[in-house]
Image 1 (cartoon, rainbow, N blue to C red):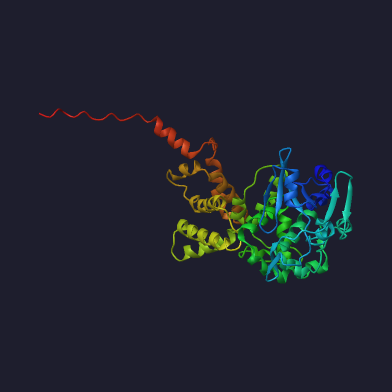
Image 2: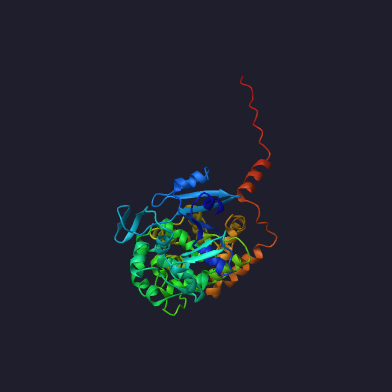
Amino acid sequence: MRELQDAGYEAFIVGGSVRDLLLGKIPKDFDVATSATPEEVQQVFPRCRLIGRRFRLAHVRKGGQLIEVATFRGSAVGDDHEKSNGRILRDNVFGSVEEDAIRRDFTINALFLDPVSGEITDYVGGYEDLAQRRLRLIGDPEVRYREDPVRLLRAARFEAKLGVVPDAESEAPIRAMAPLLMDVPPARLFEEVCKLFLTGHGVRSMEALQRFGLSSVMFPGLPNGSSRGKVQIGTVLRQTLVNTDERIRLAKPVTPAFLFAALLWQQVETRSNALVAEGETPYNAMMAAAEEAIASQAQSTAIPRRFSAVTRQIWLMQPRFARTRGKRWKRLLQEQRFRAGYDFLLLRAKEDASLEPLCDFWTKAQEGIDFSRNREDDVRKTRRGRPRRRPRRRAPAS
């Protein structure tokens, strides 16, 4: 900031980092807005990297951290803006700091902090809104939601994360405009799902999504819930969200794979039971239901293969847990995803008491088992330890 200001440019910390500082939270990162163009930023920081198509940004590395530096953006007027059905596709107009504030989404994200002088500049009443825990869009809510439908999800996320409540004008069009999310790239929605459910406020996020009528658009197998915010989901998903929030509070690792296994479980279980009723084996029924659910979800929310593969394995382990006779169950103990599948079985038992004896069996079966070993390593060691068979000596030909 000081280097940009010494070079003659205006520069402020903006967005969520200022908001979080005022709320006494630790910002995950800092974004900088400046009057310098990306090329001028590169002159100040020659090693920075310019990125972006819709709007050029500069990524500056300082002290081992990556800081995103954006030029003040101008109002959405002129030939440099390209729209489709109200949604901004290209936005490459530079402007003043006042124009940059007005074009931001929510007032609480439009505060400008000068860390050198310590002053906060507010052009849209965001400081007062934050003090009143009020979430308010800048401008016409319907126009702003249509420009970027992800703002619908951001409204739900901010309510869950910050405890702010949308004002009447900002909340009124959300439910009716929820179908706009179907036009958002699935990869971008995957990022939003992780922000909603893997940052420590998953239960409240689900409450907000259902209250705003967004959950059924994001996850067709889930209901919308009531306007009072009461969660209408199964025990497996509810307990998964509770456990995930607790793990994040304790700084333990979490994975989108287990989250999606719980989010899609209701439709997978329903479809699998229907296929079993038609005469399919439980394992094949679960496999078919898993493929259908993942393919269907990918139409709205992309799930990277490294996560969807694990999600599928968690589901496929469920019918295998019923095979407790013979020696096959011992091989299941050594599989890489056994622990995740077992944890999912325990969650299912909270919803279906008939699974408790099965949980007891697998709990006792794990006594003395070292799960830190990798199955492939075990196989290689076994092969390496086998004595080589000596070739037979053939009698000399007469």
